[in-house]
Length: 271
Picture (cartoon, rainbow, N blue to C red):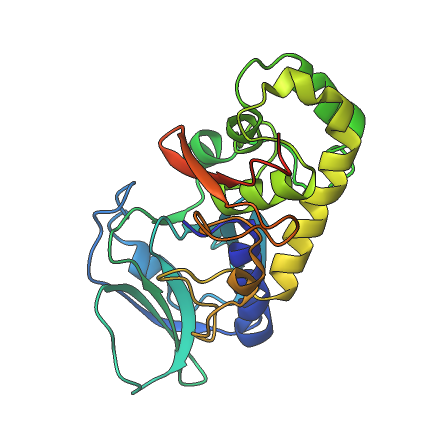
């Protein structure tokens, strides 16, 4: 699933490509996503101009003019949200097409249909956004906040860092990389990591910023708004490297299952 760096990379790409663009036509060929795309959305989008594109956690928020409100887009497990010229070859699973006045199209493609493409009503905002924790680059994600939060948690630190009510955007890939850089074993109870809170805040920001600058991580489906792959996967120290040598001590990287996901770590560096 695309994590915060991938979604932020898509957001930045879309900002540079389509902010200020006018939607002249909309086509929706499939509505059955995690939440059903409502009937009539196509008509409500025609003639609207895209004023800005924001992000909250892993959700993209498109602000429209003329009382058009906002659209919320989530890439799910396999979604792509990109721009191309009209007439370019179409791919499979292109469920939403927004045609722009300048002859380009914004495409929402999602093979597994775990994503979202919705008007951001009060109901959707409540169910999707209101429970979310602070953004990792925000001031309220502080060492004191994290220390107090960890002190109340008996779960494994890896699981806790991935809790979107604690901090948004830290998924499986980046949690593994953060814990390696902070020398914390992923199975360590979160309350035993309180003394590492300040370091964790710094390293979470460091890892996410590096990933954003590298255009995110492409493992299978992810691509940015121009259709290009990310490059941060070439910088992985532990994620996906089970059985390979640690870049620090040459021990073999190990993998365990936590919360239904694979966690990767060095048994020597992360005792």
